[in-house]
Image: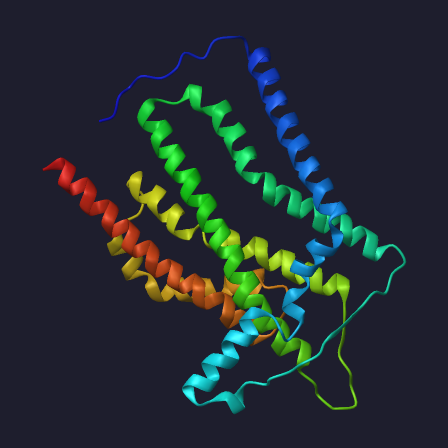
Length: 272
């Protein structure tokens, strides 16, 4: 058992409410400030955001080199071109603001999490603070990993496949900027949330709600749920994207089994 000590939370309900308001105002101010910086660096911001639409993106080049090394280079198209178009008068400006705010929140997120943890931590016991810190840190890292996997692998492969797919050579692909951005941002958010599965499994195992026997017994049911969830969270309706999203979800489920087993072993060792 950890130390039961915790900081004394003094003050009235209104004092705590005022402290929370100050915390949220600071978080909002830093997010808006980072968003303004991103807004004024438009060229650099959209160079990053629009990079997966070009055939020179690092993922495509890496796959081509991998194809050459494996002797299947002819199966990987070397060049492709997809044109983005705008169909509404204010759409580009609105998307510029939306992407800048998203980038601002992304950059400010470590400070926002610090503010929230600093506000909550005085009400926690010492061991609760430790577990909360580990959970928040692991959850943040896993969210970043999920977003990175989407940006560097899942979204580029989805965009390359769907953006170049043609039912006839007479039908040219022209993807709207709104469609491109909605798909990218939605998939980034969804993959970040999906990557929280091992952290959630660890928490449930810590509380004794989940065990490895249950997860292994219902593995086949979990695969069905994963396929349904992948179909729901993917903004496109094609099987290719569904499988690209479902595969890491299944791997994360297997990682969750390993995490729960490790937690059970650690608890058993403490009880000996």
